[in-house]
Length: 82
Image 1 (cartoon, helix red, strand yellow):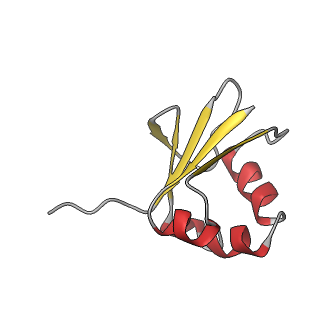
Image 2 (tube, rainbow, N blue to C red):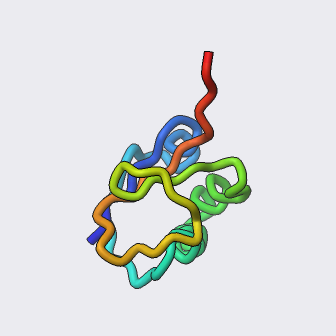
């Protein structure tokens, strides 16, 4: 089982702050494809992954990263400083 967290506009588009799911996805990119195929709201949220960042177990990562041993995946827009 993997916990998936959604932040900011990703959460707004999907309509959930988090969910737990069983997946056979080997990478973040494969997980995104699996999510996009579930429902239109996921397809909309993940339409442009260049507009997203991902963290695995609270460490910034990239979409080609392996999910082996990962317990938590978080998706969020890029941060801006101020």
